[in-house]
Image (tube, rainbow, N blue to C red; front, side, top):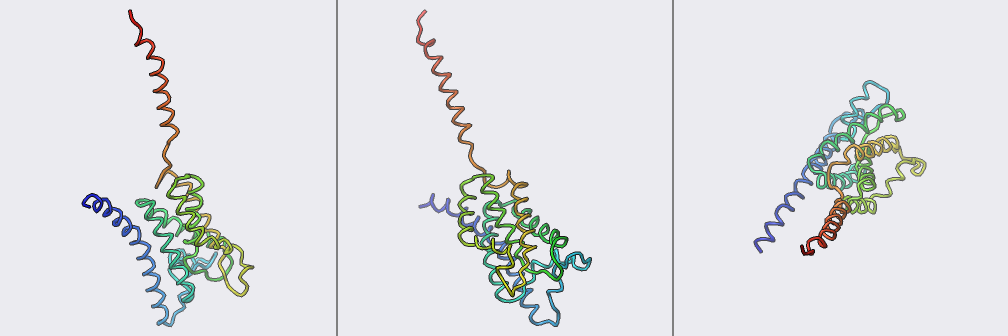
Length: 226
């Protein structure tokens, strides 16, 4: 009983640490959302306004601002699940990956997106989603593949967010979805050597075979009598 408890404690600590940052980020966006309900200022004006110098501030604030309750609710659950996976599997590099996607998706969106204000954390969600999918294909590591399958089952339908024609009457920022996904793919390549790695079974097996072969050819000499 004592040994099993000792082994379980580090797992609980890792889970708590992995939840801490994503949950804190979600609390921040909810505080901003509630605050925006009680002030006579349109928070969307702090979003990304492409090719407008004033819209550069949106690179920082756009992911923190949401249009309505449905918008922030759906993004919150996705942020919690994907953020947990990022901070659980990548630990020390998770902050770097998170903010690379955060700023790259917004900065590229400022150049690429159509006119108007773009708000919401969707670019960050698309970025983390495609970061895991790409990492699973690149690294073929068991835990990343398993998590990628889970999020594909839960959120695989987000790929339709690249096609606004499937959502008539809704102003979906497919451009920020695209730049977020691109940032996630690039991050997967850049951080390929970070996080869980696939064990090098084949190199170990080759070493074992070489040792066995050497032992085989030495044994006749050892058995010879002078």
